[in-house]
Length: 144
Image (cartoon, rainbow, N blue to C red):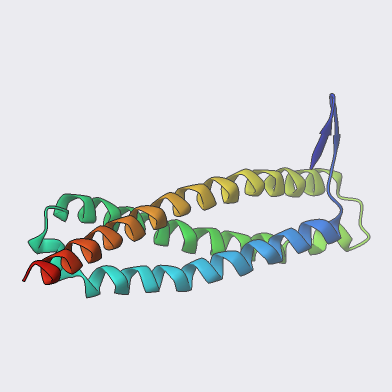
């Protein structure tokens, strides 16, 4: 949706469909990435426990699980949203339903964007945590 002064220009049904497909693709990729991040944390659990980063790791893990739940909810909601797209192209004039659908799509635009930002911050923290642990582990081996 683009805003021109006070006039709002809605996306076409094709554009909303493409956006929804892209979001679902990204969210499914993130779902796989979250499994990798969980495995990464699991692989370094012993070193995390032995390090001074335990509280940081617990916070990051909690945030990762929160984003996993949020990701799955977004995927489910987007699948429902995508299935309702037919009311935009069915040839019937259902102005109220179409307006509601367009508003819901606009809300998804900001919700998905906020989710991406939140997830990127969690991923960044986990990578930094593991990097710090790997660096400390490497330094321990060099000292011996």
